[in-house]
Image (cartoon, rainbow, N blue to C red; front, top):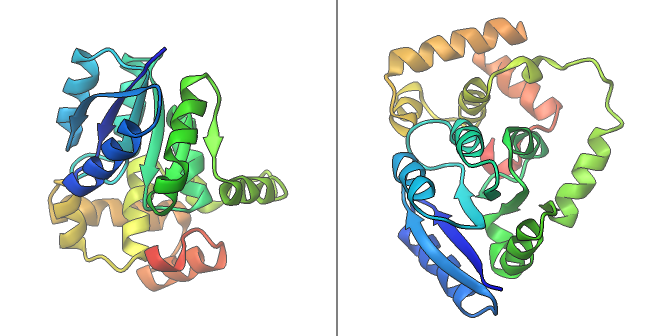
Length: 215
């Protein structure tokens, strides 16, 4: 039986690479591709498939919000998140939004076929390193930490702020105004009860929320 796969990523080279990997593996068919959020929604609405390989960092709306909407509309579609973000907190939010698997782009070439096959069969997929991070998180206190109070959109802005992106750059990446991002920033600081952006970065480092290459 052939597993039909959809690919959503804003980089043509990434899509080409994923298509090539799946084309050279037995039992997979790439049934369609998209390069942004609206295109992804149109694709999943128009195309019957078993698995969607979804990049969470495409321009526009929050990738986590897009993921949740797709699962709401297509609950039977299995979604494998493919992302540059190797952080456990980001992966946890993806699974809560409806993902069946989580794979970083740096490990995609070696693990993509196994990951797609696993989620297509009804299972869940994470790398060994990510599984270890999840296991470690189970030892943390149950009381909600300040960053866990953030919405998915606020968490995305929080991540980008900690990565050193400017207000205007974040607004451009998320297709909203700089004023809107400033409002998000103020809301993040208020929810987390943190006085300023520098303290926000220190908080992220202290709680090991983001890898060194993304914060």
